[in-house]
Length: 329
Image (cartoon, helix red, strand yellow):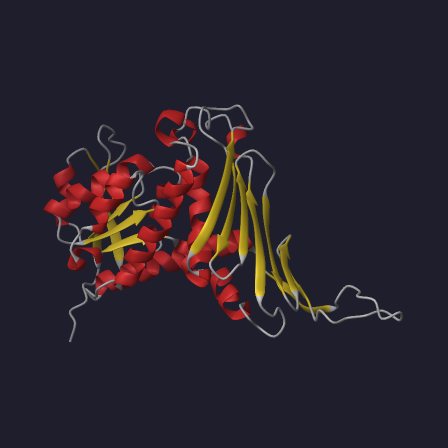
């Protein structure tokens, strides 16, 4: 019988923004608690510590700090900590860091979990269900639009996201990487890639907008538009040989079949074959909880995290770095 601890002791690196969301989710649970919140200089409540070694006695550590610190903390923990590590994406910000992670022994890789939470989303299940379905036929193109007006909030200008010296491609690292990872799970190897970044808001010095086009080995094309300089937009379009799926304004609509004709035997718009609610924003929050649940369950039973999770994270990270290289950074 596996000895499951009644309450897991967790440590977290980071306390604002996304880290605050993770802290709030953990606070709702009775099977784990945050013992330490590490920050190099700040002490905001009794859980805060400036002593990194305080983390070593925890069952698991969550890394939700700026991207440039992820590898530094993983490497430090790999030498002194024997528990599990939950790290926000991206795992690494350059090729050298990625190669070092890739060389970690398998037993260590199976205790590190990178949080690509869309793998646990309803959207992931939907894509899995609809690839080569009768309604859509063979998938040939996917469009993804995910953006909001974050760059126009007053606190953005001085944030780490807006710092071009350290996070020039912050939109690529924070948002686009999730969608690349999600689609890569289903479509496999990429043959061609194209990337246009821009700074639309003129706030800060990093890119706040990015447009990515990928062409897969099976000839499916994917376009991803992400921005922090627009109104809130969450839309997805999947085009197949027999139908067209659209998620817009929290509504999923599928038009099918292709062979729909008018009285003159000319092609006309296919009828709606499915119409249902689908809230992409809520799905993102739910998938984050599911991703955290998956990790905590592994820690509780001291089970290995499948190596495929680590390897796929490396593949996705490598693609993002290649896209950056298209612009010399």
